[in-house]
Amino acid sequence: MTMLDEIEFRNLQLDQHGPLAVLTVNRPGALNALNADTLNEISQALEAVIENPEVGALIITGGGDRAFVAGADISELAQLGDVYAGRELALAGQDVMHSVSSLPIPVIAAINGFALGGGLELALACDVRVASPRAKLGLPEVTLGLIPGFGGTQRLARLIGAGRALDLMLTARQVPAEEALGMGLVNYVADDPLQKAREVAEGMMRNAPIALSLVKEAVRRGLDTTLEAGLEVEADLFGLTVATKDFREGTSAFLAKRRAEFQGE
Ligand SMILES: C/C=C/C(=O)SCCNC(=O)CCNC(=O)[C@H](O)C(C)(C)COP(=O)(O)OP(=O)(O)OC[C@H]1O[C@@H](n2cnc3c(N)ncnc32)[C@H](O)[C@@H]1OP(=O)(O)O
Image (cartoon, rainbow, N blue to C red; front, side):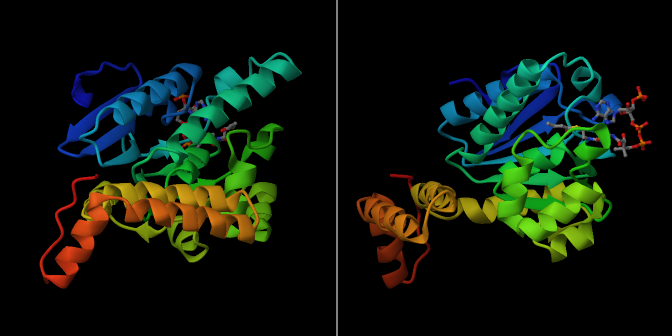
């Protein structure tokens, strides 16, 4: 099995610290903007993470000290020539964000600065967001004559409600971290967002891995359907957890007043 640190990327760094993987989008000269190469590399990195059974959580962050990701690369966007090229670019970006959101392990965004446009869309595809106090978040695409295209119109409205999402998208304003916390756009504000993300990931990884992945699946599938159908999904996935060894271990450990040791089986 390849250690994640051994894979070479041009615009990313992928590190592994035991069960924790950290993906750093690393184009600080362009505030980590997502060009086509970087999107492709993120897909490759996610595949490597999925194929490594030792990895129990992923953190995504930005290189340098100014930005998480300042959006899709505007110099590449400016080259888009026709309707079809625009649609293809949006679909390609959406595909990457979908791969992030459907990873079977917890994914945490450590937002160390600007998270704008495609950068906020990347953070929205993560399960939990930790922001530095100086982070600025927004979807400013309308200032460029565009609309968000990597999932922002859909995921932002689902996360914070259509009214707040429309305010952010129509004004294009950059929301400071504390305000983002108040509207549920981020979960935590911390001076060292990477360190806080590590602590959150480590806490999550103490829980049963299959249950973590099924919680994600239940929420994701439930958001796309009616309450009735979502409850059915929940009952089915709850049923699956009862067939796991981790369920036996978790309940036995509770009753024996000891700490559970989950194997992910
Ligand atoms: C489907 C998805 C669509 C999208 O995501 S559309 C893009 C949405 N994002 C944006 O509109 C944000 C664009 N960036 C900015 O507005 C500004 O940057 C900031 C407010 C984030 C920071 O401003 P300041 O402190 O003055 O820095 P600076 O000189 O503008 O940026 C440093 C270097 O980074 C490059 N850069 C920043 N964002 C992008 C980007 N999104 N695409 C390509 N390059 C970017 C700049 O050009 C510059 O580079 P150089 O030093 O060579 O002049």
